[in-house]
Length: 357
Image (cartoon, rainbow, N blue to C red; front, side, top):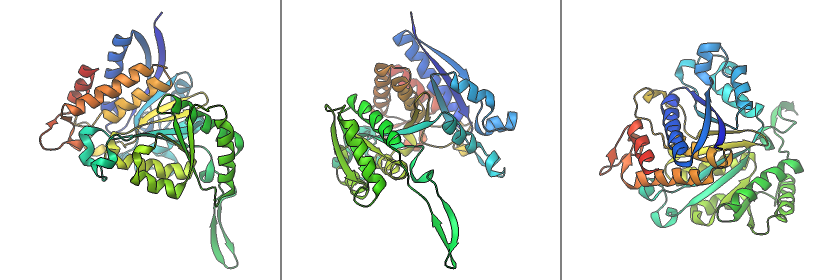
């Protein structure tokens, strides 16, 4: 009996439909190679959903998402909808689906491709061989803690936010990090500020407690300021970085920027029951419909989906290797093109990846 995986595809806006087509073509190739079956349904989100239903996340889309093994999302947003009320804009659809699916962990890889080392702000000796993963807690911490607000005290305005983490929130993100590390280089760096913040003291305590079940994985603790510095000084030493919402927001952008290819990076948002996969980049409305968008981040997001939701890690590795081979063979879309390489469009880049798959 064929292994099956139910996928909801959400093309969204801008270049979304074009790069989603690329990802689905790659998945067709995986079906043939691995004799698996992907049950793919398509839904509306963002501006496309607003145009058709008046709602950036129609209830039908949410229903389909909850009936699927994974959600594959391309991009939302664009100038066309910028003048709408804030609560009606395309981005609200993305925020709501994350909340409704209780996606508590965001995974963002930072991989330096040999073919693109010149794009990194770091010298080659530092960045060559970097392959790390930042796991950011997504639903807790200072972004959601209460009390919060702005009020008047002693005749002046005071703004305040509260960083809050419960034991179970830290435990589930830590357990995920250790499980993921077991399939990588078996090292976890937990980033906090335990020398100053009580909440980070609890974070460190719970991470140590969870580690007792993962003694085959190396654990190190690092203060966030030091982690930011070491990511620049010795990025190759990192494997899996796990941290809270605020620190993860900053660290994941830093890690991605080091590789010099932020527009090529995929991401995964995981929950206890559901998962959503999307490229880090936006909808790029200025090049939408021209067939020149870079599909790599979308294709790699599909690879992350195969690994985490469809339980096809070998297929995920094959896609990653195929992307790397295409880059090594000189294929480049306009955003990463350099003299001496082959400038190709979206479909040509996709075909280059499929041929190497």
